[in-house]
Length: 259
Image 1 (cartoon, rainbow, N blue to C red):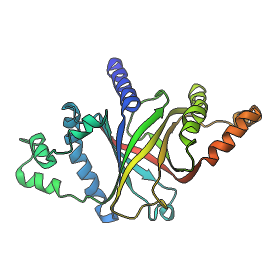
Image 2 (image 1 turned 120 degrees about the horizontal axis):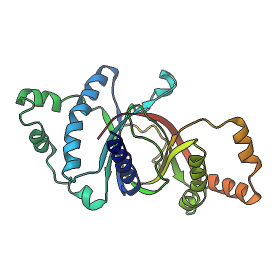
Image 3 (image 1 turned 90 degrees about the vertical axis):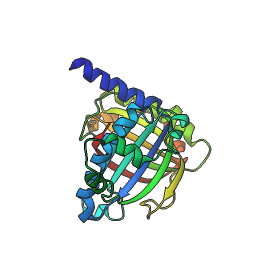
Image 4 (image 1 turned 45 degrees about the horizontal axis):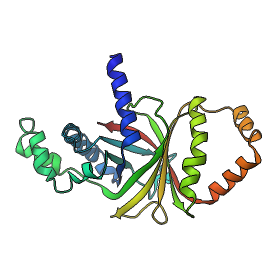
């Protein structure tokens, strides 16, 4: 069991660290379609598992957006589906793939034709698609498991220095947080393209996103110590770094499926 756990952790690190291309699909579903949609993703989980074995992708995840209340969720997505690819070559393997024929092969002998068609035609929800490129990330310090939570921030770059501020300055603070146990992960992505089929929850299309996985909550004493120990140069870098981007939204999500 220990060896198996280490393998999962190592694979997760490799996936997150070296996956160059990622697709995000945000999904909105009506309340009466929610269970049907989850059944659909569960159906697709075996298809994605086989696709990973066949070298068509690296990993697949389904996250659920969490909101403080119903009012906060209005006009915002319900689920986020992530697909990870090693590079554009691997991703291109699925470009001309007939997924229905592929799915039939996966479920051959497991589902009757009528049951397969019923699963295939379950509610899709309203979907927006985004293609991202991983620019940077920290080391992974944690365990991939159902129910884990992430914080996703989406930004609009305001000048050509923004990416450098994230990777050459802010990243070092995230790495320090990993060492003190308050963070497990940080990643930085560039949005390459988007295909919006329904209204977006942001005013405009983001150019970048960050994802963080947090651990223990820092005490007020630790927070005060951090700000008190900043040098003048640090404060100017933070000020100019924040001025290089516009926040377009922050979202909390929890993991509900993965392969």
